[in-house]
Image 1 (cartoon, one colour):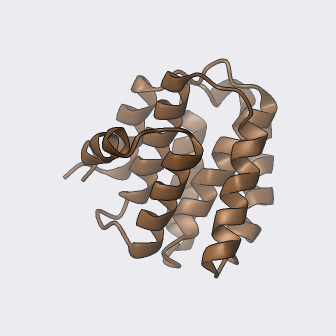
Image 2 (image 1 turned 120 degrees about the vertical axis):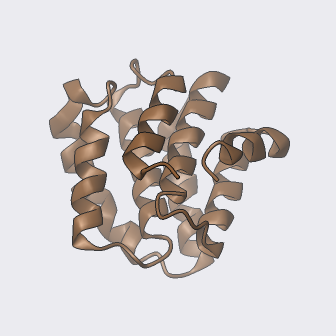
Length: 153
């Protein structure tokens, strides 16, 4: 099995995220935070690994301050989104913030998020629910979303 950092790096190489605006970076970080806290099993060490790995990706290196600030801002709402409705509302807000993207960017973003969901090698119920909702919100067909997820399962 691959480590989470390896999966994220693999997902990142397929993504077309270098030209994301600040708001789009915020949206991606918001969704990543939501997924990492979905199973209520985020340890302090995992938080550090998440932040360090995210900051090593080619599209975040030049935006370190933006990413760090957004992780701090997005972590609390994600951590305390205990109801399905609260989680779906956060995804809706993130997708609205993401704005106009092209299909390959949406698939790249979804791949990055899916790799996060599989980081502990188990797809929890809440993570699966979020992935389904995120794929739908990003206009990714169900079959394509399953194909992207299968790269990390």
